[in-house]
Amino acid sequence: MMKKFLLLLLFFMLYFLIIFSEDDPFKIPDMDMDINMNFNSDIENLFSEEFNKYFDEMNKEWEGHLKIMNEQWQELYKESQKEWDKYYKEYLIKEKKFLENFEKIWGKPFEYSSQKWFEFSEDLKTFSEVSFKSDEKNKNGYLEVKTIIEKNESPEKAMEKIKEQLKRTISKKDEFTKKPVLENLIDKKQIENPKIKKEKETVDGKIIYKTKIPIIKNPFLEKAKQYIPIVNKISKKYGLPKPFILSIIQKESSFLPYARSRSGAMGLMQLIPRYGATEAYIFLYKRKPNPRILVNELYNPEKNILYGSAYIYLLHTKYFKFEKEYSKRKYMVIAGYNMGPVAISKRVRGLNLEKMNLSGLYNYLLSNTRKETSDYLKKVLEYERNWVKIYP
Image (cartoon, rainbow, N blue to C red; front, side, top):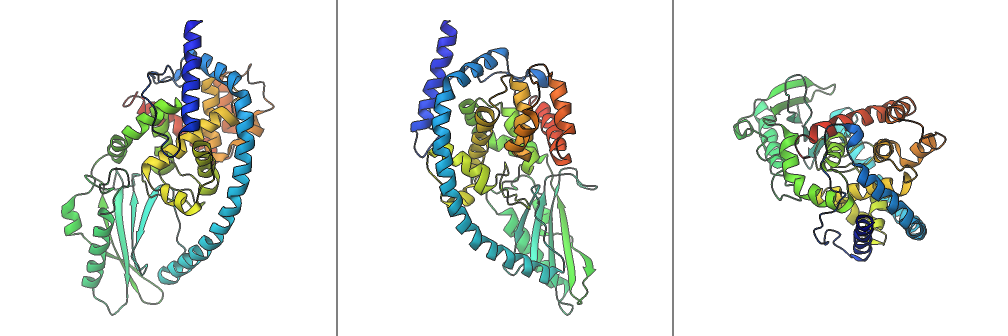
């Protein structure tokens, strides 16, 4: 009984600290909470039975609080959507202009990717693409720069533009570490003397040159090492396993802090500003966000991991709280993070979850979600098993 009482006491201490903290949600005492466990590679036992009991008690005690908070969230959320409407009207005008100009220059549409980071010259005639995913020649990913010049311009002009763009890209700093994003990941000699080649001639006679430089180290290990101080804080605060947070980051953005998807999801954990990010912000600060400030914050790794993890915490405690067993709930959370919690809730609500074992739920989710979501679930669990060996 005493242990149970202490667990509940710790929960309420954490709850009130979150509620009354103003602008810095990290300002909480260091606590050796029972929710911060050691994990093994068995996906069915990533959380102990003790945490499941703790979570069950938390759900019972917090039922009333969540009801009140849900009403507050709904009101703030509705108000915030009006401001997002105004923001997106301006944003879409700029975005349309950018896409039209890019296609006019390059002769093809620009495609965003959640797994890539793009940097552009002011005139859009030169751009860099960074990927941490392997291709046929670069097992750790690459930094590629392309430039387009007029037919009467020399290859030396192309080289000059490519060098400028390379320097611009490798000097771009991570807003958390204050160091270049690609520090220790690129051979400097290849930046100083890149090998360029003519890619093709366009329909209107312009010429495209490019260079492709390999990433020299495992970028996932390098970036995880940089972000683990943030992940440690968040893991303690929300009871989320470190390997789980890292696996979401890897699947969402490949650890590229400036990644952005076609749907407008941004940063390490690929949050859509007006939806998941806004919900997390309201939960953390009990007020609606300023759209412009929040959008900029999503490229800051510390803020992005905070908002992404807070959103995952809400998936556990709000959207999927009806499932008491952590491992089953985790599968729903992963699928919900990708496809949307409401869509996943609708798919599992009619199931007899108590009688369904973990592998049964896993197979059900694979068969009853879109391919993107079923692939997402598989990959996150695979990455989690890998990360647990490095950051248990």
